[in-house]
Image 1 (cartoon, helix red, strand yellow):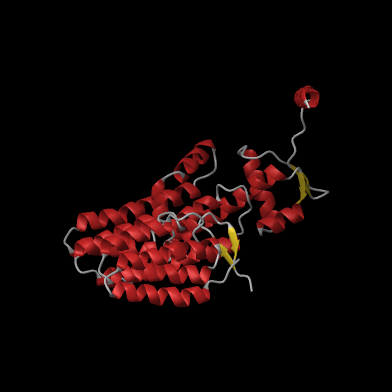
Image 2 (cartoon, helix red, strand yellow):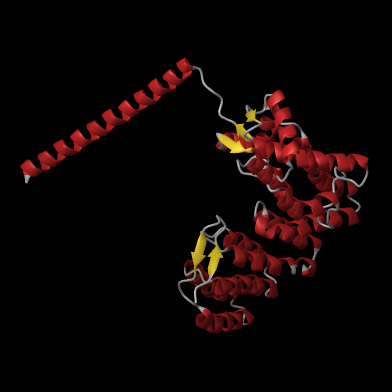
Length: 364
């Protein structure tokens, strides 16, 4: 039976070899060596096995090996080896997401069992480093960040604890208010520059929300609500709400603005891909009534965000602006010149190949 796994880059892997039997033999052997004080030999066996299971796309076996490696380091109280192997294993080429998740979850259970605060902070730092930007371990990363802030607070270092939390809260507000801002060149420029901010990796949910408004695809309002409404309005223990969408009148207005920005984004995307579309179909895609669709579209046309012309009798929206005859002729001329350049280049390459072939034929 074949099972699918995913690498860190999102590539789909199909299991080619089942290493279950090998795992059942090698892991106990490694455990025995570790108990005898031969941790290095035990890790060598497991690291070799990890390469085999990973390249064979055996997710279940790879997960067992990764967990075994960090567990043996922890049980041997070799915390330096633990941190080093966490970094090593997450950086492996074509590493399997599911296996990394299992390993990170296992390591998170060790945080409270560290012998002293310095070792504990080092493990937290290692785990936060390797989980940065990885959405599939965002929950674990958020919990580690929250724990780090709590530790700083317990130490009496409230300023540093507040800084850790406030930096994330401030960045969340920037993301939300940029999304809520009306679209123009400045807003578009800022939102693309914000996307490059590495701090967004600390708040993956907000990073993904921002990405929705940058990606040239339609956003389903219902899908956005299911994925983000709870965390935006209520927050969680690991990711407190910002207050932008509070339960007062202003919060409700902001949520209504969010819906309007989704609608406006979707109309801009339609204008990019459609030359013409019926008002009925457009309303279905926007999840609005025809009257509401017409009103929003009119506002965008007046603000010159999009160009559109409506045939109300036929119920058709035309996004294709009629060009001046001279402009059409210029476009045709440019396209023809490009075509002729490609033809000339192709002819040159064909002649070159023929000459090389004749030369080789003469020598033979």
